[in-house]
Amino acid sequence: MAKRIALFNHKGGVSKTTTAFNLSWKLAERGHRVVVADTDPQCNLTGLVLGFKGPSELENFYRDHADRNIYAGLTPAFESRPIPIGPIECVEVIDGMFLLPGNIRLSEYETTLGIAQELSGSIHALQNLPGAMVRLFEETAAKHSAEYIIIDMSPGLGAINQNLMATSDYLIVPTAPDFFSVMAIDSLARVLPRWHAWARQASEMDVLRNAAYPFPAPSTKLLGAIVQNFRPRGGAPASSFKRWIDELGDAVRDRLVPAARDTGLLLPDAKYAQAGVPSDTLIMVQIPDFNSLVALSQDCQKPVFALDEDDTRQSGVVLEGTLRNRDQFNTLFEGLAEQVSSLTA
Image 1 (tube, rainbow, N blue to C red):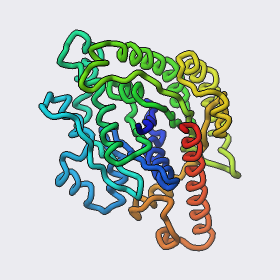
Image 2 (tube, one colour; image 1 turned 180 degrees about the vertical axis):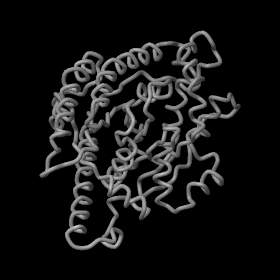
Image 3 (cartoon, rainbow, N blue to C red; image 1 turned 30 degrees about the vertical axis):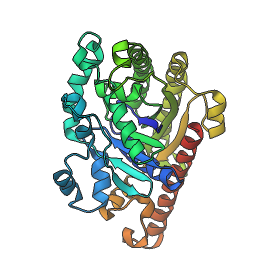
Image 4 (cartoon, rainbow, N blue to C red; image 1 turned 120 degrees about the vertical axis):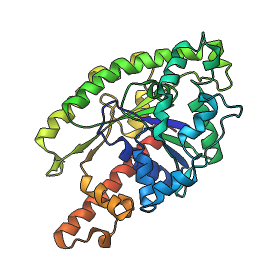
């Protein structure tokens, strides 16, 4: 069974998509087989991957492969079609890394899933919906012999995200050093236990446990948080960002970690220590603002890791700084991939 890792924070602008893409890439480079699933109806991850493949690839893909996306994969369950959910033929990104493309129409299933998750015990026709996404991921991972499914989630607290988080094996919380990210950590400390309690109750209902797509017993564990999108100065976060990084650490340590521990959402402390993740703040890595590199990579239609001197159209000390930042970006994500491998082993 592939390990499902959800990247979730209901605050937007915290680089969930960038993290999902680069983490998946690095896990694949380490020899793992990875499906990265775009469950955000905005489809930023899909646009990123297909944009690297050519300027017209995105339009051509949806025109020529209408059945190769998450919405189409869930249609048999949500539209009661007389065919079972089957695997999606994903887009190969690199050797060992595959994209399960998103679709803006996935948001059309939000209300239906919400109703199913509240009323499936009394409305028999809805019993197959809560377990449908798990089945789609399992079938697709098996088709591609994947060890990991990295789930790029949208910001929000709707039924789809509730389902995805509650049925994932692991959770990573990307954050940014600002006031609203601290508020979001406080909110997650309240929301995650509620979602876990709902999933536990749902998994014990005979109507969902015996459905065509059974709803699994929850086993989610919080791997940690990522702090990113801050400007460095002298090799460390600038003072204006350091304040919020400290506040994020405090919020995780004082609110999120205790709530997760009380709910059974944490790994043993020794596991975090072995992976180099502090068990109090659970901050896995701090990633400075590499927006200029990300923009350059998109312009060149290649990942940051693959940028070379010709791509930058720079020279001298400017070029040296860009290549140094590229290598730092690469090193940070290699370290994150190592932590994920260790924590999920």
